[in-house]
Image: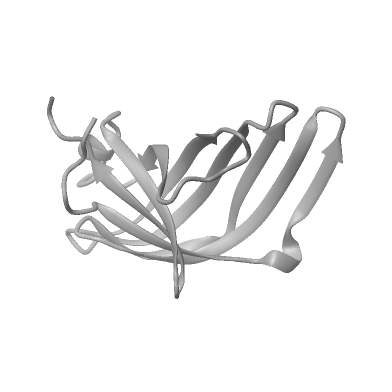
Length: 144
């Protein structure tokens, strides 16, 4: 399915490599990567709180599941202060991560202006490393 041209949110993530924790065992590897960042877009601007974590589990079949969970703090499109919680999931096979990699986000917000829109299952994400960090851009899916 295609997505619209312009992202609704552009999240720039700065990871904390020193804070990364890895567990390896016979069933695979679990890596937890802490991060923070900034976010811009037509709906919202603000920060990624420094409590974000990307949990990556690679199983014995070399399938990687990425699940990033993080809280945004800032202002919605009306200028009102608000939060947006994001759970963003992606799956990669053979241990590889395509460029850009694609994800499926879920949003929760306390913004009365954004909730009717963000609380729907109509979004996709794309991630790509750039000079200033890892960018996760969220898009609204186009109608079929």
